[in-house]
Length: 326
Image (tube, rainbow, N blue to C red; front, side, top):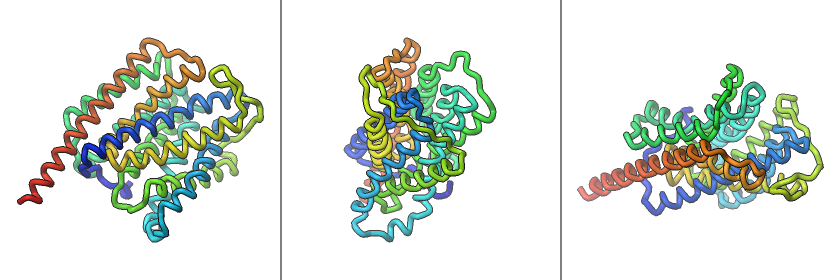
């Protein structure tokens, strides 16, 4: 992972507020994929088919916008081809493929817990690789979020399979790479272009896996039921592609550049809380009291980390201003 940059840029508070808003939009957009995909699974769609079509639609929608955002600066793409390929391979394809491979060997809860340890992996990477030691407040926020995540996923009676755990760790690495690459400021690539390139590469890789049989695909034209209403399958897939791929990845890149990898990764944990709430609204899956307490702890952990990162950003800004003045 030598291609990713450290999380060391001080961002003005106005920029951080915009980053937090974008991170929330990205997390909510990603979380919508669970209930929508779940409704398709009940009609005969395989997870592989849903993921492939979702990412492909996202690529088709974002790619023209990414080209326009370039404004003819194709040298930026040539200069960052390896990074774009890495983003698509790890941040898009590997995260999706490894997660669905994991749940073929183990329960969803433990698989998600391993995958969502990505924010902690980001913190460790930035500390060991770039010397960016987390503050005590950040560590406290990590602890709160970790306990909350355990409660939200409700791992009572869950078992862990070694093969499944290995695949889930692959998904975690992909998710960590997603946050680290999103936060890079030295590429010159507009967020739309990076997201478009990543989705295009991810589509090619997932399509290849499907073609050789490693990603099983099956589909159905039966109507889908959401929130008690019947919807055509193509409408659900359209929302999956537009929102949970297109909007989610573009806003994720934009958030990472404003917040840095560490804060953006922890804001991404809001996806878990949002997924529980959306499953309640769309699939009538009422969260239990333990899950609600867990959600509150995740939110508290995210807030603590954001406050700690904002304080660090203010300190860096003040130090930079002091150096300029001297």
